Length: 383
Image 1 (spheres, rainbow, N blue to C red):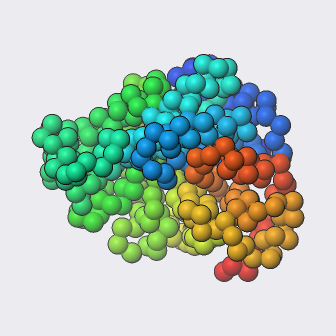
Image 2: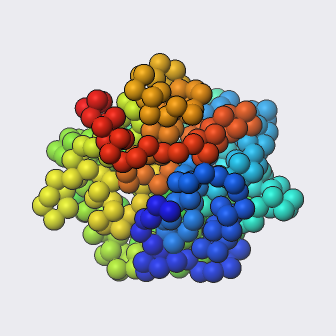
């Protein structure tokens, strides 16, 4: 089993608590599924699937809601217990659809709450169900006139990390999903803040957010928190918007002590975006190293987003990728297997809003990963 850092204090989460994923529950979930070697990943003191379900794309309508609710149940049946969304995905519809699907699965005995790692995000100002005729006016009335956020706290008209706002978002996500607790609450693209504030001011805002999220964890509303980024953790040091992970961890430690709950990262990684595992974009103790290595040294785990680059990598795979994974039939499967095979990645998170896509993607669980030496030789061709 692949290992990754442990829980709040380096150990396992509480046993038997049905409010969130537990060590025993997640281990039992994976044990009941007949998946191949390499599928079970040890992270956060839990046993997690080597593929996660995402929920970013799709129209904001009832038909897509129904597809996601059905797909999350199919994902559980296939052996996937990492579920990822965001409050702003499809104007809060994705959270609600996944919540409905999970509750139905729990009620039907298809899975238990303690078997599933449920992750969502906060940071972007969400609409509600659909885009209103006057988007800017709606956002101002909903978030500013209500007193939930101050104008100076909102960046680029759409992004906020203020503690009062984040507390509101946690409450809304719990209401949307019908869950008693969120396993991982990501701050969504925190680097967006540096569009308008200095790096120093950004760190102050990050630290204040960490203080709030530590309190949310103490209250049992969330279990862990993290950063889900697009550019910040993979762009070169010195580039505008770069996030220095060591500094983020230091601020979290100032907020929560050595037992802080900042434990999870999410960023793009795929055949076309290789920086997370292979480019030295981070520094720890003065050494230049890749993000995944920095995360491991600092006690965090890493999930990868856009493993199929929103569909662009579902065709045209190079021949050497076909050779290294001879048992896979589609280029989408090969692209997912490449990410599953990469060092330092717990699981790729792939959007799946149809049962057919779940079935196609789950095939990778049953095919062996390439040996490390063979995989590194493959990667050298992409440098």
